[in-house]
Image 1 (tube, rainbow, N blue to C red):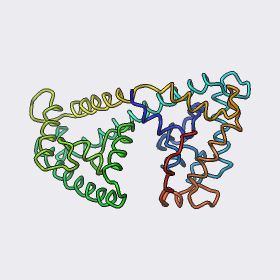
Image 2: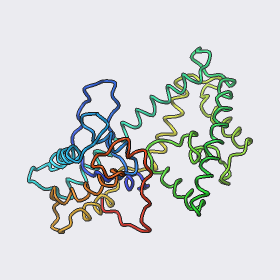
Image 3: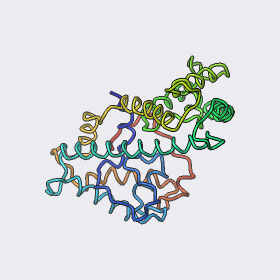
Image 4: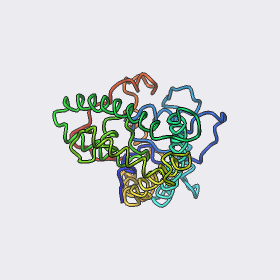
Amino acid sequence: MKTAFLAGAVATALLCPLVADASQSAPARPLVVGHSDNVTAFIAQHDGDGDGRLSWAEFDAFRRQRFDATDANHDGSVDVEEYVREFETRSRQAREQAREDQIAQTGRRFDALDADRDGRVSRTEFDASGERVFAEGQQALAKENAELAKSGDAATERAARAERRRGRMALPSAHTGDGFLALYDGNDDGQVERAEFDRARAAQFTRTDANRDDTLDREEYLAEFRQRLDRHYATLGGGSDKQTRVRFAALDTDKDGRMTFAEYQVSGRRSFDAADRNRDGVVDAADAALPPPAPPARAASGN
């Protein structure tokens, strides 16, 4: 079972019941995010009033609500079974939410491919899109390679990015260098030759054209995507019971088998401070624009 998704998604740990947005058009708040490496997602998850700014008081109130909701027997503390149950529920809901979002986005992608708006994507339309994908993917890959060259160990960093990608709920995107490689680098040599790109695109068209009429309709296009997405989700597995229990043990600092809110907020304070990169007491767009601090050589996860 793959566990990278769970390992990278648990900084905020506990779940409160979903509350419907007042605005139908507002995007759903993330249910699970990384520690505080993605500041934009961190804000979106905890910013209750939607003003794009997250103070400690607002974050603390959100965490209190989550903690109380996870405390199923209302005894003022959270035991390991409550903790595991909560995270499994939130992870499942996050996947369902992400799946629907990705399918909707794929429908919009079909509409963009269907240049003549006849409800079908011809091979000509598909290939025209491929030209753009190839050009943009090569640009993204070149930019990423230049960034990796500065790291001093490009191969190790590339492998680390690939591992993180495998744990994400979204399928790879050709808009990023590592996603472009995941989709089209058939021989795993770290580059995408035109011939292997064309082979992969041709195979995708053939695979998607279920009725073999040399065009793709919306249902065929969505069905092929759903199949790939569901195969990817199967590699992620459900939740990682073992990892969740390890995280609980790390949070339960006095090792009495129960997590108090004070113990829980040790992790919360660390998450908030990591997201508040400019140290002004508020997490906002200014923090998202700053690079994350360099990670320690080896740090144990305590979230």
